[in-house]
Amino acid sequence: MYTASGTLDKEQLVVQYAPLVKRIAYHLMAKLPASVQVEDIIQNGMLGLLDAINRYEEGLGAQFETYAVQRVRGAMLDGLRENDWLPRSLRRDMRRIEAAVHQLEQQNGRPPTEKELADSLGLPLSDYQHMLQEARGYQLVYFEDFTSDGEDDYLERHITLEGNDPLTLLLEGSMRDVLVRAIDDLPEREQTVMGLYYEQDMNLREIGEVLGVSESRVCQLHSQAIARLRARISGVAQGMVKAKADGRARGRRPAAS
Picture 1 (tube, rainbow, N blue to C red):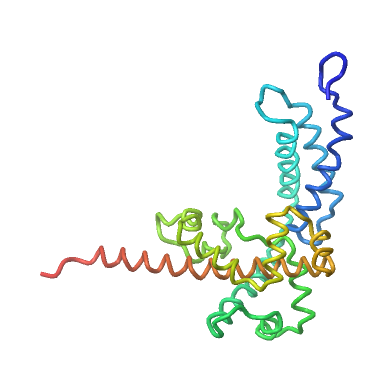
Picture 2: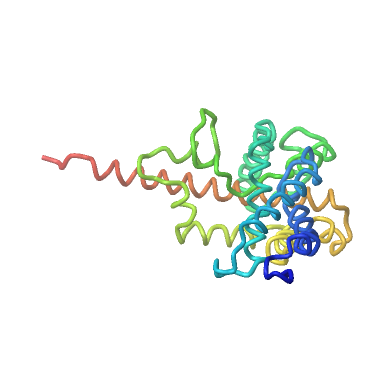
């Protein structure tokens, strides 16, 4: 990796790590709406790679690849933030799905099927699946979920009491248990998609090859799984906040004379 003069061979590093940039970009695409072009993500990632090469010092205590991955991901995310890649209309649509998931789970005592969700939303199944496809990029938690910008954002609409930090609630042991149970309750194919994507680090195309379905179908399953998990967490968070509010109200009541 070094030239005869003892400096980093930047050209060789670019050639060697360009495939890594491409892999990171395609993995990230599962979290992005279809309007985002993978070529733009790769371009930002290459800028991050060049920045890593220019900044890297052996004394940082990390292998170059570890350092480069951080810089590449950071450059990709910076580019996405600048372009405001997640439309609010997409979040509104997915909140409708979350609400339908929650209602049907309470009503039937089990995870609803795609057909049941489509019927609940008054949509043909094909239109519902198209909505899931367009929702590529919908995540379990967003930074905006924990901040106020004048909109009615997730968790924020339930957690309004002073001192109830939503991130703290999410990380509490009970919430972790809820998330684990929610993942266990996912339909088998959605569980498989989540495991292959988040544990095995596979991209949508690779997961589709494993399952024998199209990349777009994997995208739909991923979006639907996220909606189920968010609906479960939202419902539990609401219950936790209500319980804490009731406890505080009881604590503020004056003693009987």
